Amino acid sequence: MLRSLYSGISGLRSHQEMLDVTGNNIANVNTVGFKASSTVFQDTLSQMTQGAGGPQTGIGGTNPAQIGLGVQVAGVSTNFAQGSAQATGKATDLMISGDGFFVTRLGNDTVYSRAGAFDFDADGRLVSPDGKIVQGYSATNGVVNDGGGLTDIVLPLDAAAPATATSSATVTGNLPSETPVNEVLNRDATVYDQNGTKHTLTLAYKRTQDGWSVSASNGQGTAATGAITFGTDGKITSGATLAVGDITVDMTQLSGFAGLNTASISSQNGHEAGALQGYTISKDGTVVGSFSNGSSLAIGRIALATFANPAGLEKTGASGYRATANSGQAAIGAPGSAGVGSLASGTLEMSNVDLSQEFTNLIVAQRGFQANARIITTSDEVLQELTNLKR
Image (cartoon, rainbow, N blue to C red; front, side, top):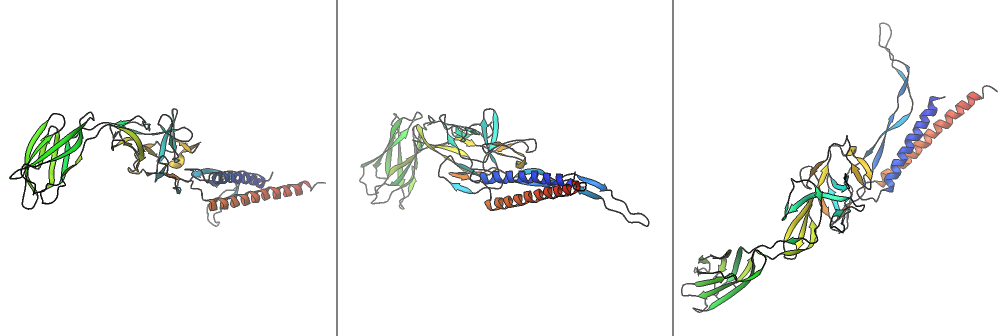
């Protein structure tokens, strides 16, 4: 049989694979996190009809004569270029800006993905649409354990922010200098003990000949007294702090001008225990819980994986990848660390398929298929002529 007949068959087979790859790219044009693939061709083994000859005295060298035996698909490569961003406004929709893959668990299998369309399930675990559980680092009392092993990212719906005892309070404003001697100005504020129980911190400012005397009570049976004075410029000159039990009262911002009675306990650093009310996911992958007492604590941090050769990953379906011998082992790190992209919450990475390029590839594959089909028909006509030699 003619060699061209088999070359044409290999061309049909190879261009059919190119059509398959192109068709898959077009089909996934709207798939979140999809990465387009491309087909790479290479020629097959060539048949030697005449070997090369070296130059000799009186005769020059000759080149080898080889006839190719067709084409084959060398490989299907994946393009991991960044896809466009689509804003969704949903906090659990995440996009990796830069390199990296989400680490997910499906049973005992670890699957990597660029698709960040996640949600919380009934157990509070962050999962993909097909149930794969997102992995990351746990947090204890608001501190993320980056050096620990990977675990499921869980939003504990019954989580509570611990109470914090008040250790400092700040007094600001002005005590009027024209206040009559022996007149008392009372100022109160709510403070908390280590169990989160509310108490009332009371400060009583009594006008004296030289300044003010201060009597304080923390509402738990502990009292303290002190004295403060102001200079001619209205700024405090002595008695700027007062210790009432475990609470240090800072009065350095008090002033003693005339005409203003604005002194108040403007802030204190304690709070009661709080229930989880909401959450946010930051650029570094930290899941931050917002609690009813106004505090914010880290609940966990999403981890990302990078590979020495991402093109060596094996597609597992459902927008997932599995590590192979040629991808290298996964290097796990927190978003934003060296070589790892950051996260954008409320945004999804769309497919990086370029439709104009894919339709062009479709035309090229179709014409290549037609040309190779013409080789087969032409070879058939030649064979027909040969069989017609004997009638």
